[in-house]
Length: 276
Length: 277
Image (tube, rainbow over all chains, first blue to last red; front, side, top):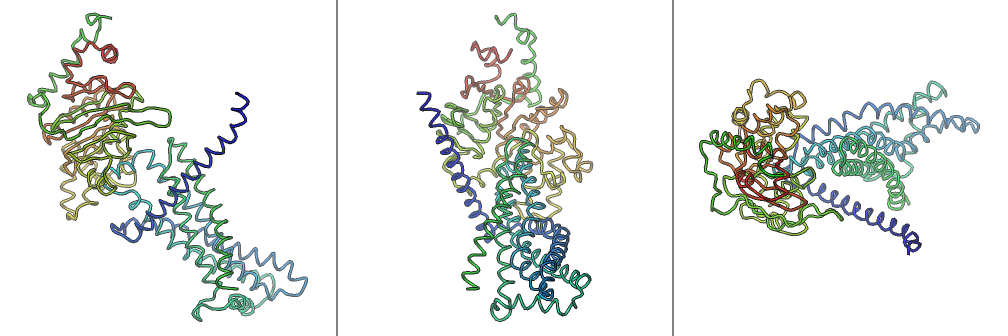
């Protein structure tokens, strides 16, 4: 009997984990549904939205500038080592431009905002949960999803694409700096090379390069992931201050994994729909 | 143990608390009203996994009554308040607040229903990022279009009701307040919209005996001046006897006693006697 019990234990454990996964998935998408509905229906919390735009968007500009600058510089340096062997340093702008706009800009921006703002959202909402401030909202007839989640959700949707543009521009400028100072390229040559790579996949409506468009679609999804995951962890916090720490860590780890996985699938989709 | 040897009964402290409370309330009638109860809990059962938190709890709160729910730690006292507010749903049973069923209410109906109630949280649950002015006026800012100066006047009035000097606290953040002041601001926030029902979760926990007494007297004063129905969850017998005209004792998920404080003092039930001791 006990042998049978111990043999069943792993399956029971697996069953419990799967049930928990199904439970959290269901609640996560329920939160997404309520956040989307709250974004387009009254009451709107404009003041809270502007506070969040300031905290998440304006507050992240510093780290995004540094991330973009050093990423562009290091990309130019690394590619120069390889390309010099073939006398192809004039194509460095292509490499920096393509990798930044398509991948590194959106993904690095999202990961940096996750680390900075995502952990902050989870910790703030977590602290509000354990000190009963979220219950206090509920008891005063105020929907915490509309008051707390929706402003953060909308702020992330707006801020992430804008921050990604900043990262892209600064990374290209960082590459330009290395190209001019270290590799003796002219700014004109470098920028033409950047433009060439952005133009090669065509234009949407004859104006927006497909690469740039694709690079700005991804941050919208990443913004949704950061806000929802951080809010989900924050709202579900249990267990006092220790729970707040766990919520912040969980929010960053899970958001980061979701961002990287979603990036792969979005890239597949964009290639299939817009490029091929 | 016989009642005669019990120091609490001998001292008559609890009876003295009752007498004092009666004076504060201007000889308010002790008997509960025959009107329809404002809160009616019917056979509530709540389980968390294997653990049964509430096992058939029934309780009525008549208009104007102050019902104190007593019980040991983890007896499920605060859960009763969460159930009344619809923050937690029972596995079975019925919760009626002013005739409306909380269990079957929609999300929007629940939000509307909660606007009839004011809740005072154990640790006050003030919003950290807001000043006392914004905390106390929160309900009015959210649900009304009153002009700023009118809200400010109402905030001042509420703060005065809880014996705080508005000019001294209006611009302070919760972190700058003492424990007793936080509780008072929490009460001022709960009553700003003059709810029909006030719910208190351990309003005196963590306070020194003198501040506890002042908060108890404040609860009595609000009963007298606002004529609200109140449910007070506490583990402090003296507070319960001072402020409640009905007392319910929760033990192992069941209400083992409900009646007036005097009836409780005269009860022969072994657990009631043990709890009072």
